[in-house]
Length: 445
Image 1 (cartoon, rainbow, N blue to C red):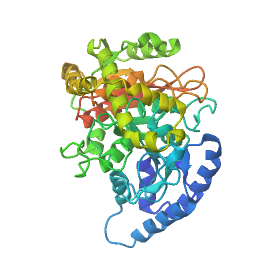
Image 2: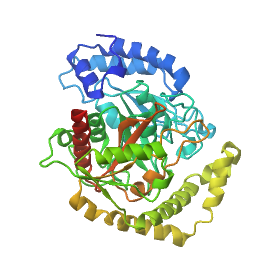
Image 3: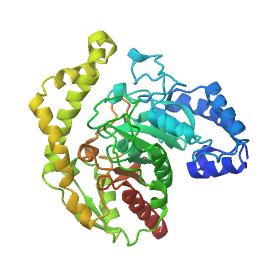
C-alpha cells in the first residue's frame, strides 16, 4: 500500500496505516512529494518544500521502528506550517521579500512538539504579507479563480487540495475560520493561550492564536492536543494542564448538546443564498434555536481594531524603519493609520477583553456552542482580496475557541461553513458538541 494517497485519509487513518506497517513511510512520502510538487504549480499553497528534507525525515522515522519506544501519535503524518512559524528545516519569511531566505536557529515550540510526536514537517505554507490582508499567490482549490481566504491561505488550501491532512495556521482576526470556510475544510482556533506562540511572528500578541486545519474534527483535536500546553516561554500561554481533547471529543455527550444560532449585526451583509442556507439549517435541526447577541459586540469590533493596529505597528517598527520600500503600499498605509491609536484607546480596548468574554457566560449556561455564519458567503472571485473577517472578529477579541464546520456548498459549487464558538478554556466541550452535531446531520441525511 505504498501508494496510499493522503487525499483519501484523515491523519488518524494515515497514522494507523503507517504504524501498522501496511504503508511504508519512505516510499509513501516520496510518492506523495511528487504528487504535491505537480499539484502545487496550480494551487501555490506552499512557499517552501524540499524533497531531500522530507526524505531525511522519512529515513529518521524508519529508523525509529527498530527502537523500543512506541511510535508517536503523528508518526509519518505530513503537516504544513504557516510561513510565520519558525522551522530550522525551511526558511521563515513572513510572506515578505524583506525576510527572504531567513532561517531560524531553533524550531518554534509547536514545531518541536509535532516532530516529537513523529510528524513530518512537509513544508511552509503561504501567508499574506506579515499575516495581514495583502494576499499571497495561493488559489482556492475548488476554483482557481477565487481566493482561499487569509491570512492562513496556504494552510487551508493545502488541506483542501489533499496535499497534507493537517496544516498549522494562525488567527489574529479571521485567519483560520474564514479560509477554512472558503476552502471547505475543518478549522480550529483554540482558546487564547492554549497553544504557545514561541517562534511565531508576534503580529498582535494580545490577539494572536495558533490554529489547525484538517479534514476531520478528530484530527483537529489530536493535533491541538499534541501542540498545546505551557512551554515556559510564551507568557500568554495558559498555565492550566492541557485537556485530553481527542478522548473527550470522541465520547458521547452526557446529554444531547444544545446550540443557538445568532445572525450577528452583519447579517445583512451575508450573501442572500447563504442566508437561505443558514435559515434552512436552523429550521431543520431541533437542537438549534435562534438567539440575539449582546450590544457590546459592535463595540468589540472597534476595540479589536485598536489593539491590532497598535500592536502591528510596534511589531513591524524595525521593518518600517530599516526597509520601508520592502513593505507593500497597502501595509504602509495601514501602519500610518495605526499611528492614530492613542495609548488610552489601546489600554481601554485591552481592558475590555475579559468583559466581552463574560458577556457570553450566560449563553454557555444554556447552550453548548454558539453558531454563526463562518463567512459572509463563499470565497469571493479574484485574488486581490482575502475576504472580510467580520464574522470572527468578536470571538477572536474575546479569546473564545471557535471551529469551522464545512457543511454546505452554494450553487456555484464553492464551500460555505458554519462557525461554532465555545466557552473560553472549554475547548474539549466545543469539539465534542461540534462532532455530535456533524454526526447527527450525517445520520439524518
